[in-house]
Image (cartoon, rainbow, N blue to C red; front, side):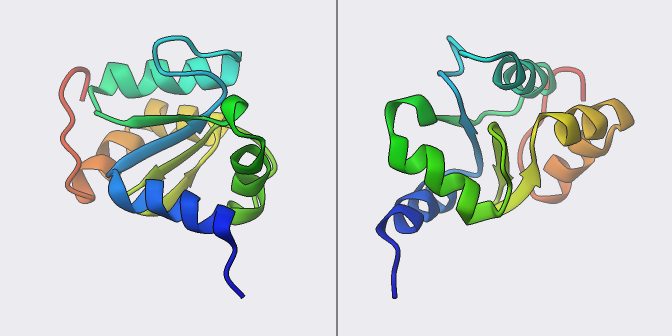
Length: 112
């Protein structure tokens, strides 16, 4: 049985090399955790697509089930779930996030 919400989520993930499911937008994050991940991605210089889960209740709940991860934001790189805010922060601080982006062929610029 196909899940139309999962199909929409997969569409976003497959259409964009880096996708952040977040509360708010990259320009106007509406929670501190989303803002922190946006700040990290911007610092590393990674182009990404933000998907505002506050605009779509189905996506907001569906993304939690899709990744089996209870919190938002959620970062996907080249179709692979990377993690939420704490994981992204730890990876960034250790230099692992920048390395992951390079391994996946995602361009990084500032601070990398």
